Image (cartoon, rainbow, N blue to C red; front, top):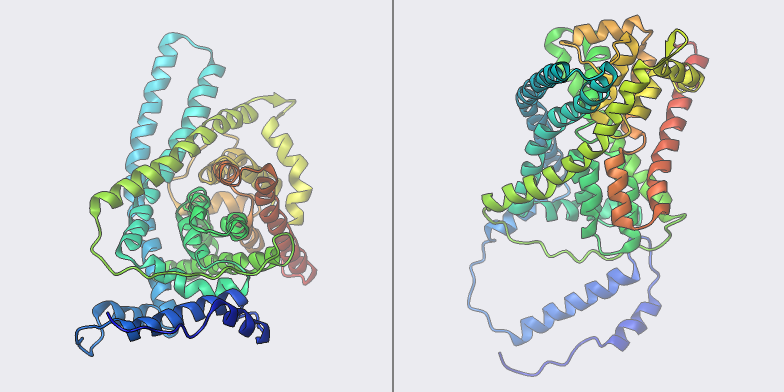
Length: 469
């Protein structure tokens, strides 16, 4: 290193030039200053640093970045990887979910024997075993396998160095909403679990942009909502096509639902940044790390201990009491009807107005602790079984839904409501812990709730007004 270099641009020069620039929405003052500093640093380094002769060919990292961050290939590759992770999660979780359910529900039978031998009252067995324990078993068997697959795959992409490229690709879209490109990473994490997505908002430096990410993370469906979406799409959309095309059509419907959730994320982020969270987007100074081989031990620890078990613990704590409450509502009668049926009747006008019915709306309300129990609660209510149940096949589920008045409009509004409605209690608890403010936690509940009701109301009323339903 040798020679003396006169800095080409001082801070005063930068400020003087900044006054002359008319900034557009895509060329903020912060971006200009940061770009100027880096450009000058690069020119200074070229003058004072002597390098050995390097090969003209680009390194492997550079060639990969040319593809993964290009406008032509960046987004398709990103969507393909996300779709592959979804497919692996959904397909891979079926068998372990069934195995865990068999074990846990077999233990329920053993608990029943012990309660019978102990001579406990029937109501106590109902509350603790058929209510509390059954809900806990359901949440664990449905929630654990998908998270145990999704989070390691997501962490693998993180360890390989790909996720910073995702943030780089998405930065321009989020910047147009005056949000941060890192929100793309928190949004992706939300596909596994919205509570984990909320916790991952810590990576965003700006408090304003962190709140935007926190308030909008719920619009991407978590693994707790995917079973409901897949079942309805398979029955009412895929079922209308030949068997060989049914799965493909249902997959396209789910993909459309996911894209609608992402579009809602952008729309609400833009609205928040122009109203209660006004401000300019911060400059995303993102150093793309080199691609590196994954550290399997670290991936397993971070994905299973820090994420999967952390989120599952919160979900179980919330879902178990809800199961006990649901059993009480379904087994305590006032006149000829259970409290559950009375509540559904009271909610019927509101449910009908948004394209649902009182039982569907009540199932979503009682499923607040965990989205995994929405369909079991709905079947319990429809069939008056007194406990949450699951049917053995989609054909049986289809028949039950059709017998209770489901139409294409009910299916569409149910999927939209499932996508857009309020966060589960685990996510709300995470929102409170991360924001430290009850106001932002309440808004994280209120915003998606209002949007879900408004969109379903407009669709239902429009379809009925046009005589389509």
